[in-house]
Image 1 (tube, one colour):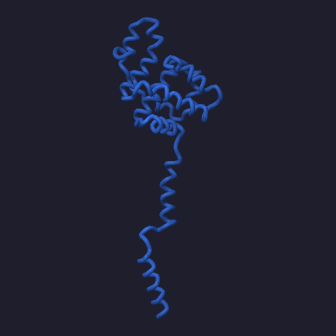
Image 2: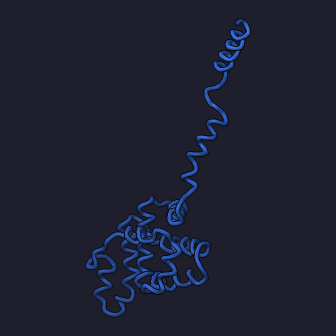
Length: 172
């Protein structure tokens, strides 16, 4: 009986004198919490890169990327754009994040009234109008394109970056 009382007393004093953390047990749970942050879709990696490198919020990054990708899609057409689309998971959500624009106002509205020359430049103007609507400086278009190029170089097949550049040639 005395031995069990001594052991109980030692366990109680040890428990009361240890810090409030559980050491490896806390690390076990914090590692579990970190796993969902590590497992991201590639599209989120692209959005995250734009956010961190250009200082934009998520809706600005998604809308800006969507505007650029929409221009590339309209310039290239479905078949040529398919290599870009297959390289960026969740591209449909990025395309839908591009803000709706009024073709009667802004720079693109003026170019629409300028005839053939204006219509050839209208796609680029729509990107700049979308950036303005999102609160993004138009000077960030080129750095955003560079981020997408780097992403495609790392995650897409050969020639995909060239296809993107062809689709965005109006603004570059």
